[in-house]
Length: 488
Image (tube, rainbow, N blue to C red; front, side, top):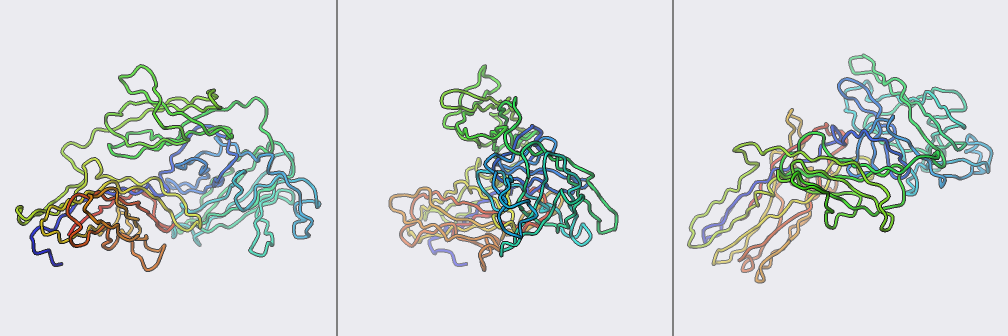
């Protein structure tokens, strides 16, 4: 590549990018008792961990999502789910036309719970036929339970039905994320017992055994008080620079949305409010100065505090002695002619994307986050202009050797600040590979920003929104890659 004739013109900076841990071991395992009544959840979440087949609950009603044991969850079918059996022959399996039923629909209603089943964490090639079987083996409750879905023509297909004999078995391919209508014929408390079975590629068999799921249709039994908890805090140590996201969790879920977060450092005697943090989630960066800090959150009804969480503790490790996540390397030819330098503040050299979540189409794991500021300074008197670009040439890798290509990471560049005489222009969107063809994301060199001839002299601060998008069959793990930034 030809360099400007004035001399300096080439510099590099490195950023270490840690992707979200993809679907294992995060979302974190939560042990608190909760009532889920609104929002998305993979109620029957099939997992293969440590050689064992397990049934869990993936709770997406909080952000980041958490994995729960079914014994810790009550699924509430709110009174608003009440409807009637349609007067159509195809739906006669639900009862007499006009009779009352309580239904969580196949298509999401934000006012109700939206439960489904999920095998997206299961890897291809592990199970015979790349599928497992999911069975409803028992229902104990005041009425009948039916799960069904409909095709594009509205024709129903029954998946599980309690009033014509159980167990009912459904073969489910790996990488499946599905929803159905959950119909209950009466109010009250139900225990639905599910079981997953599979045959491994070597012909050995696995089973979860029966696992109970508790559903309450209608109002909760009297005597249940509102409780408030915090999810998202790691049990172990964070590394300096890690992103921390705490989520307030109401149980049961209710309409109140006004919170206040508090912190107490080791040297402080009392919890103090965190200014501006009044939402359901609170995100910040772990530093050694915060080691040993406690956090609580309070829920308000107007000015009245109606619930206060127990405290959670933040533990932050010492940075490795003598280590550095990345370096800035600057090459200059002739200082008298000026220099072009691209640099990253040491505190911004590690980028941790939040936990990946399933895309709306259910076919990719996705995460977005900020690149954090990148500075380009041009002191060259000839003002030849410049281009800043980035590339994850070597892709992403886990500690145990699993990989995916850098092209699955893309960005939307932006200009945070520039000098009054500059004309810096943000680069085009680099879409992750497989989302918008023929884009290849940051697997190839992608322009972050550029300054035309005569408009680059001075200092500009650049940033970008990063987007990770990988197929659902990407192996689980915490992936790390290096983004190399170049100015020329």
